[in-house]
Image 1: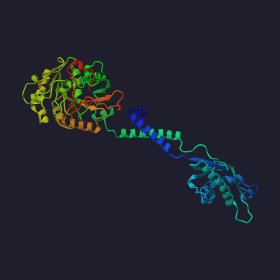
Image 2: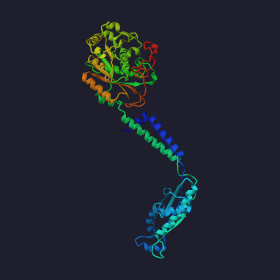
Image 3: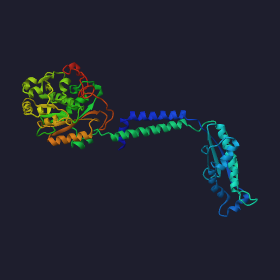
Image 4: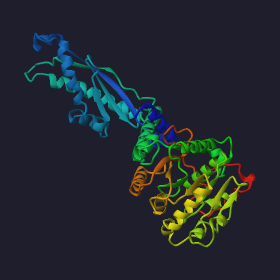
Length: 474
């Protein structure tokens, strides 16, 4: 990942990262407040060789060299029974080896003894007792066993321990600082894990790799537009410009054989195919072309509800031979486009859409309209759109940004290849305006969301009323 990828990641998951960081900081503060205070007292011993013993050490080493070599060993004696047992007996209470430590600063002959205890006075008493005992033990160990011999090493207490006035643990500022660092690290780690586990389509690279072509249209999400579904009617809407761009790209996708009959579908439900089909039809109709929008999703039709028209009579009646298509088509907004609703839901949608009557109907519509836009069912759950695609000039495949998975898109492309359908191009839908090809900030839900998804019977605005066309589309 590049730096800009990490920046996008931080912008996408900043709420989660912040929440994790705050949680860790609160935990660090809680630990700090509940932890017992510990005080540390320190004393020091100075170790030197006696003047008369230098020759005993040997000509190769001076007394100072001898002492500096031995002093590292002396630091290990403070936690031995030879020191702690006499100290415990003298003080009248046991001294734990873990509370006592010693060290020798580099290139010195000093031994620093530190004692930690919840009681500052007790810590000082133990430090002084251990220091005195260690000084005696050093001289005892260094004294030769010969009679009358003296120790070549002299250990002197040069610094007494005094009760400390402030605790050494816990340290609030250090704990909070560590909490910030650990929280940020944990938050970013969780964000990276979520990103690595996210298999949804979020970049143009994903689309191009799987489909073999760049998106023919990119439709952004605009939360300021409200709940209106026909955004193409708004001349200043970014979404309106997106559908005009889709309209233009569709006209030039194959200049030798421009598509006239187009089926709009998706991999699964909830990706906004119906609103894409509807807005595309409106955008084409605004150029003066004769457009027929056909709701061929005979399982969960939405066009009539979205446009605020009667859908009880429509495509299924025409295919069943109950009435001519001219009586089923409904003009919308003073003839901006013609709409053929789905009609009653049939028990056999796939067979009905794959019938000779459907092929004949499309041939009749070709003679009457410049463009026929069909809203088909999703490809993966049912075969309706796949059957329909064999009668059309091509397929527009709607991909929902951050929702459609790469596996679903791959299976959809394979399905189109198996039936020999022509993919006019993918359409990226619900793309956050600040995403630059990657997803963050989505979580909206209009169109197939905002209460207008598959299987939702919530009332919509009457889109045949011009006064209601003031908001968002999907």
